[in-house]
Length: 149
Image (tube, rainbow, N blue to C red; front, side):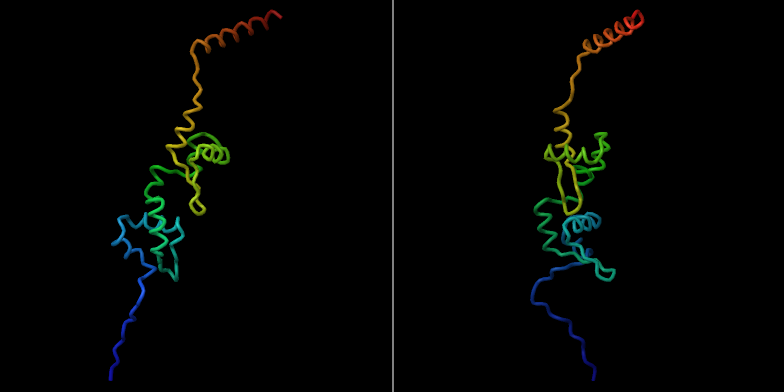
């Protein structure tokens, strides 16, 4: 007599899903799904299988949105902001913090590019062209005086 295998019947909803299952539910591509899951700590790897905690992921996406999709556009990493400003990373983190543009998502530091740009624009130094000509003229006069002294 052959016994049929019965599939287990779960009485509570699933908590963990494979990425392929979530792609059918959530409106994002696989790359952004995995990046968001990593950012919020919802990605688990168990014997070469990836599982995503749906509760944690949805809580994160509802709170901050599709952050992985916006990293290339609205946000950048500190090293990229440092290259943009021409400063080292410590100085850039200080400026971004003062501007209110520095965010930490788990271990990843992100900078809101637009907020940082507006903050830095406030300190733009305006130079009057006549002042530059005057400074250059004064330097020429000092050089001539050095020859006579």
